[in-house]
Length: 227
Image (cartoon, rainbow, N blue to C red):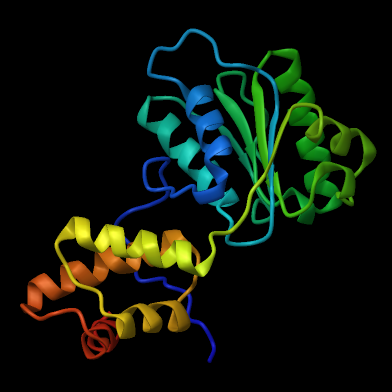
C-alpha cells in the first residue's frame, strides 16, 4: 500500500525538543551543546556533518537549529537543493546550514564553497547534512574535504519497534489510547518518519477532542476527509 505524506498545514515544526534520538543521542547532544543558550559568547566554529538515509532526522535537526536560533533572535545562512538564487554571505549569521549536500548542483556547490570559505575566515560554524559520508560525496574536492574536516555523525532511522514505543509513550503522556490497529494504520498509510507521525498524533488528538470521539481508524479517515 502506498504511503501518504502528511501535509495538512501542521501547526508545529521541527525542534530539538521534539526530536526523538533513539540511536542518535550523540548527535543531538552535540547540537544542543553547540547551540548553547541565548547570549552565549562563543560557539565552536568547527564544522559538523550529519549523514544517513532518508527519514533518519538530518533535515529535522538542521531545521530545528535554524528555528532555535531564530527564537534567540539570530539568523543563519540556509542552502538546500530548493535554493536556486542564494543570498550573499552575511557576516551577521550565527552559522551556515546546508541540507542535502549530496544533491547539490554545480552552481550550489560553488555557493556552498564560497560560504564555507567566508565562514571559516570569520570563525563561523558550518553544519551540513547529506545521505553519504563525506568521502563518498560526488562533490568538488575542495567542498567535500571541508565537509569532512570536523565532527561527523552517522544517523540511523528508528526501527519500527522504536517508533511504536515512542508513539505509545507520547499517546500515554496525552492520556489517549492507541490500539494496535490504529498504530498499524498510522505506520502503513502515512509517512513513517517520526516527526510526521508525532504531528499526526497531535492532529488526531485535537480532532478527537473537538469531536468528542475516541481515536479509531474511522476517526482518522474522517479527519483526513475534512482536512
